[in-house]
Amino acid sequence: MSKPRADAAKRHSARSTSPHRWSGRVTAHSNAMDLEPDVFEQGSASRIAASLKRSAQRSTRRKSEPFRSAMSMLNFYINRAGRHLGTKQRAVLERAKSKLRQLFHRPAEK
Image (cartoon, rainbow, N blue to C red; front, side, top):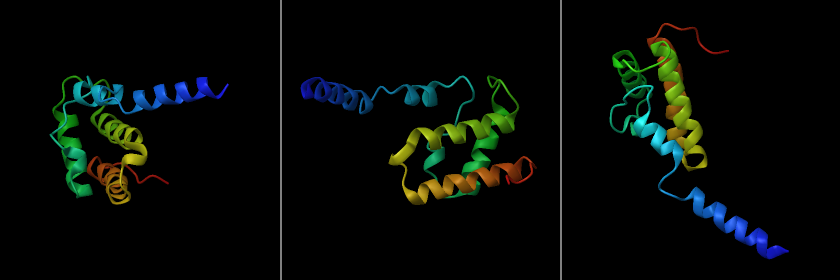
């Protein structure tokens, strides 16, 4: 009985390490907006937020208002990076959410 479980685990790990992940395709070819290169790798929350705001406002393909598109893309990246996102970079991205709210003159999250 343990053999099928081992095979299933092997298949799952092979799928999860594939370079052809759906989330990578979504990020690269998103119909929501075009991002500036390496926007999420920047070390400054203010720079990330400003870049997302510019991208959202320039986009003609987004389906909602610029703030929602920018925040959705930021949340999508944080969620998809998961445990592979370092503690420092996760903190920077979480601060970028607050900065993005400030740039769009939105109230702070409670």
